[in-house]
Image 1 (cartoon, rainbow, N blue to C red):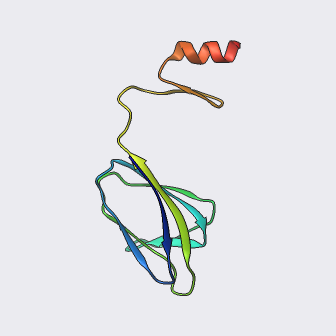
Image 2 (tube, rainbow, N blue to C red):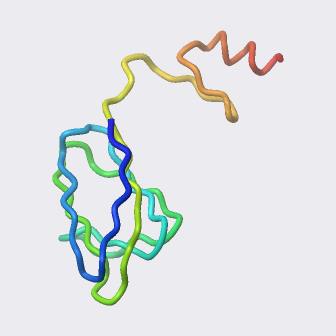
Length: 99
């Protein structure tokens, strides 16, 4: 499991290793691009990263960026979601809805 704050100074790069299958970045401040891809991601965006790919993030040349890296291995059993209830048991979701 990974949960890390990353601060990139202007033009700095950070390599996200492929060791976790499920990975994402949340842009807290500024913007960030992925080297080799067009476009940038902006503040308050959550970006899911491709599993197994080695990703290199880069801050723009004249702006810093602050982001959170989150990820880990997928859970073994499926998850059921209803509104803000999440459980591995559909029956627990139904009970939460009734309560």
